[in-house]
Amino acid sequence: MSVEPMVFSAQSRLLPPLILFGLTFALTLGGILARPIESLSLFWPVNAVLAGVLLRHPRQGSILGVALMYVAMVSADLICGSEWRPALWFNLCNVGAIVTFWRLLAHLPRSHRRLRTPHGVLRVFAACAAGAVVAASLACVMAAPWFDQSLRATWLAWFSEQFSTSVLVLPIMLTAPSLPALVRSGGLPVRLAPLLVLLASLVLSIVFGGPGAIAFPISALLWCALSYSPFMLSLLSLTAGSTLIVAVAQNLMHFSVPQSEPGVTALMSARLGIAMLVLGPLVVACVSNANRALLSRLAHQATIDHLTGALTRSAFARQANALLEGRQQHAQALPLTLMMLDIDYFKAINDRHGHAVGDYVLRQCARALQDQLHDGELFARLGGEEFVIVIPGLAPEQAAFTAERLRRAVQDLQMVQGEVPLRITVSIGVSGCNDSQPIADLDALLADADQALYRAKAHGRNRVEQAQRQVI
Image (cartoon, rainbow, N blue to C red; front, side, top):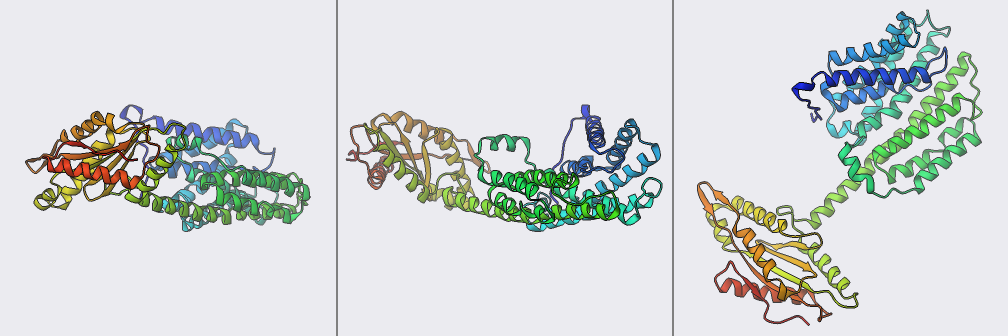
């Protein structure tokens, strides 16, 4: 099982319990103040949020952590004027839901728990239903002293509220990215059209009204599922679901919601229907996200050499040709240098030490070369032990210093096989075109660099040779 631990220093061991207590107290206090007087909460996110905290930070999932949450809930209830007996019992119902959510999901594989698979989405929905059943059943045990409704109405009230709220809130907690990942994605463009259509569908649901109006946002949510990440979709689902629940409760959608048992049942039905609307879009978002990740991996494999991290030959050809085409669009063509590099005596290294050592040498050489390059400069592995570098803006006749710097970076590598040091060097052939040559062909540049590399090998290796002719 993959977990995500939260690690604290010895000096701050009391900090996590205090944070957990404070978070629970604040959430409970806010939920109590927001609910109607003498009524169950219309929307109670406390249980789902705390279950998400336990799942994201497993070290807090202990008897002490659960006890602290219970004490914080009871304390908030008593401060708000509740009697101690209902405060003790009904917060025990809340804790029962939290523990059920947590225990059913804690042992899932990380990919399921983070809603990256359709199976994970279904398991989360099942856990939400189970937690709602536990909370509703515990509430009914002691319902008589505090509720005038029948046990059936009480059970339905608790179940529908707990299920709908947890389905809308818990996916946000499970899919929320880490802060560094959220910062990195802050600059990514967001498509506005699906969001605007979702908002329009919510307005239409309220304006049109009637029981069937709660299904109006489903098409927009499916579009959002294809356009956004599961976390973003979870936020939008919470917005849509909570808006519809409030609209139904306030009779803005022309539902008949009197205070009798049938009226309460109608509100339950609306809550459950709204919660179930989220299931389809979440599954679609999960599948869509998995497909995007697969395509990204395939594109990465087609672009990046898995061993060295350099561009593949085909990716290099595409990017180098695009660079040459862009160069010709300038009024005065920019100079460009192409270097071909070959690790000296690489076959002997493989024969003597084995291919595992050969792969290690390739990785270390590639890393040393990449450390010497800047943004916009191309670095690729052509095959075997042969690499190529393209440096825009540098004329070939001025590239001697750069080529020598690359050669020395490899020569200075400290590698040891067993107790035997490995002396690794490269030979480099340089070609290119200066600003007076507006036309450059990649194949011709590569051929000239290859000829220069051949001469470097013939003249003793571990040296740099310039091409003897310029490409025109």
